[in-house]
Length: 361
Image (cartoon, rainbow, N blue to C red; front, side, top):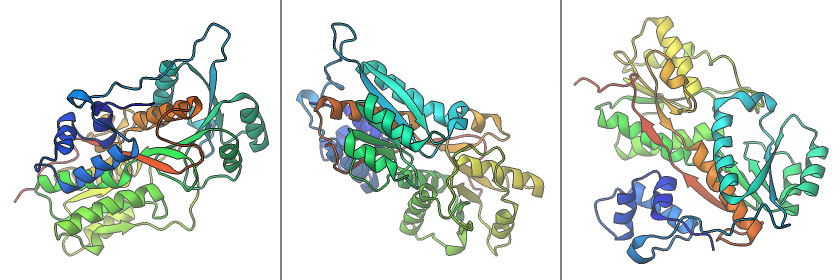
């Protein structure tokens, strides 16, 4: 049976090993939100503390590569991303987690992108794959349902989607909460959240985390939640090349009677657009406005000026744990079941950089 160590639980919950240990021992010095998040992970993976509170990490039977037995093939399907994403750092981060799991579990990987013919995808995967990793997207094509009915499937990505199959995804709600808590600790009280794609489920979940914390502190104000409406939701199958123009959004925030001293943005790409808008307006970051992005994928947050503080979302861990879960399904072990919905969410952690500073009193 698939087993997880206390370190696995800590990584998946986005907390320290010591925090997991305190929660398992019912200690009082843990916040309710962190306790809830960690206990959710413990329940989802059916973790049970063994002697000295430890279990071995992933004690699986490997598939021999020699002796005549078939090497298992995992088909990685990304219906929302075309081949243009293959050079993108977000994509390579996901892929590194999948490849690490495949190496550990003795599996071969085949990749199918959104610009391939759906009929060919279904036929090839059905004939040659032992299981399917599906990169979740806000809008999932119909042919994924056919694959889910035929083969063991596990979803992974930035957000869960409806479907009768296990999924491992980012905890976006926790990400928004992590960002705003950091700003509160730095003395900020007028904190805005900028969602530059109001229909985007990922950004909505992150803004919900922001709203929850701000309301719990009695600091939430409707004018600080800025959501930019698109004419309709559009799935971007190729990576964008230019950050969004957020000069109008910045103008609206700065025109408020009490403008914010800090802004959390839905993702790093939007934060880059806000940095450009501040520069064009003659505003200094972080002296005039602190900015936190979300994702921290690739090197760009460290290359912009000022360097961008960001909640680093665990894309590689999500892909790794999803791949291990799929191997469990193919081997008939573990707590997750084929054609049964289950969701594991993994939280990120804040990377402090030059775009934020304490608010002067």
